[in-house]
Image (cartoon, rainbow, N blue to C red; front, side, top):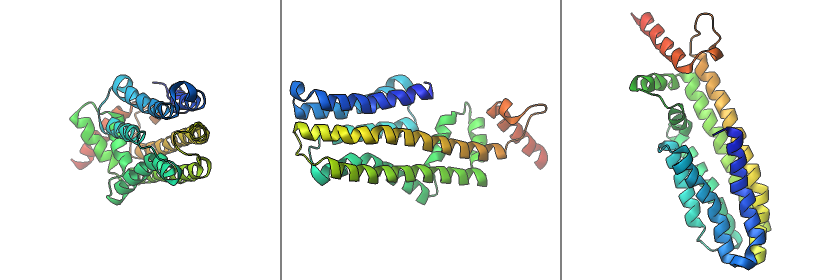
Length: 244
């Protein structure tokens, strides 16, 4: 799916539709049902994207699916005040914990995202890609990229908690509560989604630059004009020739 289309759909389904539901369906559905429906719409979208659109079950989709299930379960935790502020921030906190642990363990999560995203077609390609990712500059870029996403998740979790704590002050199960939740969502969902896309873009640039530092060039071609896997294979051949 085109990235711009994906971003637009994430914003529409993840933010616009839930906000409209929270602001307009309280009388028709009841406040509690309205809240649950609004909370589950983004969850349904994530699962639909994972199971029916992406249709790949790997590390990335497992992570996304786990995140969606967590959000779905939390929708039925009916709380308000500081507990709601914490509940609504658990998703970002989850990302902070996962990214942070991966760095502490020396296995940056961006490594696994990249391995799945590159989708090597054979064991030989997978072995070559792993060797490339083990190079010092590439590994450093993976760590730095993971830290960028960790920082974004940390900022998102703190900001989301503070906004909810300050704005969502009504009791759960009231129209005012749903409207206040919608107000916070209008601020956070679009902002955080765009911020995450920007962070992922910066991470991709850093990693790509580091990877291509170790790749050769084909005769008569710029690196950008060559297929990545062809360059990786050429790198392997050159290393074999140098070792022989």
